[in-house]
Length: 135
Image (cartoon, rainbow, N blue to C red; front, top):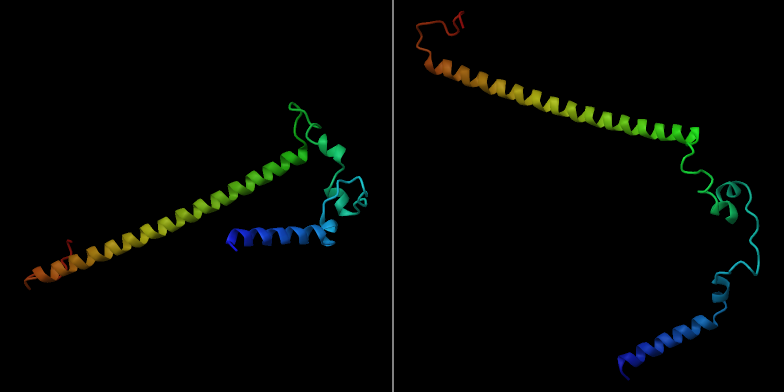
């Protein structure tokens, strides 16, 4: 027996089992005509709306009518919080860069000071004080 016959027979057996099993009918989707679902209670009633209201939901406000005050305030709060986060991010980046520049400047000053001190020690001939006051 070839492998195609084996695959065909296994698929046929699976299909037969699925069509005859009693669990399949209970898992099928009903079209709503056989039994009406119970009315939603409590918070589900506020979340879900009837089909007729859902169809007209976006038609309630025309293009020219203004936004509701709560909607405008919510948008402003979102915009202000985004601006605050952006401001904090850039402040943090600026502080980090300033600290980096200050550390680099301090290291450069330290290297310059060491080089100057080495130069003075190398060129000191003993006749003059080590660090003259005029410098």
